[in-house]
Image 1 (cartoon, rainbow, N blue to C red):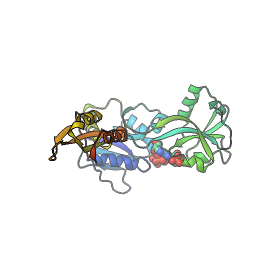
Image 2 (cartoon, helix red, strand yellow):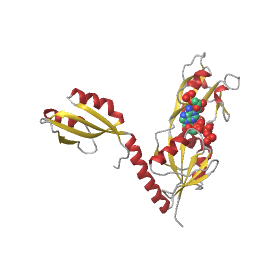
Image 3 (spheres, rainbow, N blue to C red):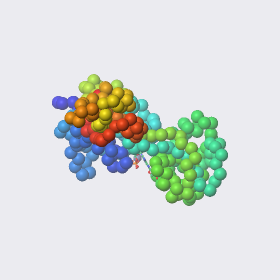
Image 4 (cartoon, helix red, strand yellow):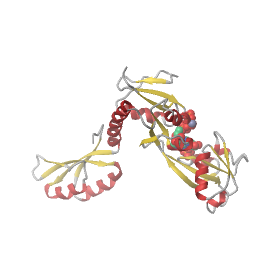
Amino acid sequence: METKIRIALQKKGRLNEDSMKLFKEAGIKFSVGSGKLVASSASFPIEVLFLRDDDIPQTVADGVADIGIVGENEMYEKGFDVDVVRKLGFGKCRLSLAIPKALEYEGLKWFEGKKIATSYPNILKDYFSKKGINADIHEIAGSVEIAPGIGLADAIFDIVSSGSTLVANRLKEVDVAMHSEAVLIAKKGLEPEKQELLDQLLFRLNAVQAASSNKYVLLNAPNDKVDDIVKILPGMKSPTVLPLADKGWSSIHSVISEKEFWDVIDKLKANGAQGILIIPIEKMIL
Ligand code: PRT
Ligand code: ZN
């Protein structure tokens, strides 16, 4: 029987859509019947288990699934021993302490002896013990942000992304304990055939991730500016320079990363580049 790698993905919620998109871009489509908990793919030897994110770390640690996608917050909270294979760049958020907006805040000692509501008691316990704070940590499963307003707690420790939930509940973020994003995790000591499949999967994910964080750039420049422009463009190797039909001009092609994008474009313009075209890259094999 053909070996398959089994992955645990969030059934529905914030990580589901981005996880499915990542696989689709890697050429892996799942046939998901509505309400089905297991799916397989015709284009890659992989099987998916759709679970609540809370159950994913244990499912992978126990080897019921070989790999999984979960938020770092959930992975650290559950504390199971798994390998973090790759950060995935989506599901970004932070775990923060927030207090009622009207109260004065003068540093972490504010929390000494206070009651704090959270769904992440283990992460908070570790953070406070590192910082030498003693507080009463009160675990609740959801709607953490309403706890101070109804008198259940003095403060909260919760996930924040835009911060609008805090504002709506008259709270202010006063301290960030950790940043989190979705990660690909794997069972410790994967069997060699499964590891081989994981490597093939990572090869595809690399191509997708590299493509989405880079752009292809084409531009025209007078020949006497080519050397200056080539110095600005890092590229995968050195940029391609082709002569234009118009004598005295060249076309330059290269790849630039999203991070340095605007900076590079400004420098190119300042150095005489014209007709700059920026093209998205479909896949990039490094
Ligand atoms: O059903 P299941 O248990 O699988 O899902 P869930 O409800 O536990 O999790 P879900 O889908 O809400 O989140 C899954 C993961 O997404 C989390 O574990 C985080 O790693 C990540 N993530 C990223 C977030 C957010 N951003 C986020 N904003 N998870 C939750 N939120 C909440 C936050 O708690 C706040 O109440 O969204 C609310 C809005 O945030 P603001 O700051 O934008 O207002
Ligand atoms: Zn959950």
